[in-house]
Length: 261
Ligand SMILES: Nc1ncnc2c1ncn2[C@@H]1O[C@H](COP(=O)(O)OP(=O)(O)OP(=O)(O)O)[C@@H](O)[C@H]1O
Image (cartoon, rainbow, N blue to C red):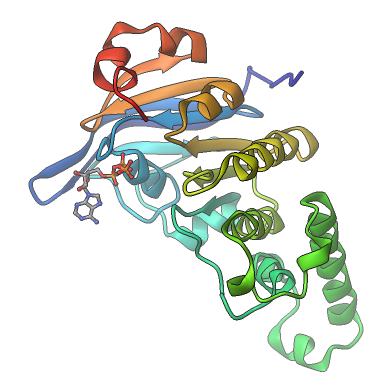
């Protein structure tokens, strides 16, 4: 059984609002993510879930409100700053370099970790070589962890969807994030692929201690995986609590759980 550290808040979202023209995607949303937990964000289509992830990792700048991550508050941040600061993410649709191998795709996750300059890298000499060996070692460890040794040299375009999603998870892990954002990690998967991905999400949380926030429509998966669940509807947070609390919340049942997903 996982034992999340429930004392320390890793990320605080405070009164965040976001509009696209006249569409209010988020309305004064506040919630936190505690260090070590698996946190889900659920809600009907168009509720604002992806917008929320995009605000957290700097793709969108909120019109109002603030984000505090590892004790630092900000209203604006660029995605590369978020990544450098320890926030990694996967996307609703697989976003990999399709012609490149699984190994090389995961290797791209190390880019922000490279310390030696381009010249050193080109010379592949001394400290740069040592660093490259370290990166490769780290990537091979992730490949073992995700059980994808057999497909490490295969171009990702040739892989089944479930494995592509696993490679994408590997690339995010290669960034050694403190906070991993997963946007519908099970979307389009068959049952077996979903079970595998669930297992890997729990293993990442256990093994690396990575805090995870995920958006997911499959309620069985959400209730099974998550420590806490926040529910959005029309850009408003309508509930927040443990899976049991959320499942029995009448507002949530009326807005979301009452309909088939
Ligand atoms: N780039 C954009 N430009 C204009 N409107 C947008 C943009 N992104 C999102 N929206 C609108 O903001 C609202 C929230 O969208 P968002 O994608 O965050 O919802 P969601 O809960 O992730 O939905 P889904 O479950 O369908 O992915 C929707 O009305 C959507 O049409």
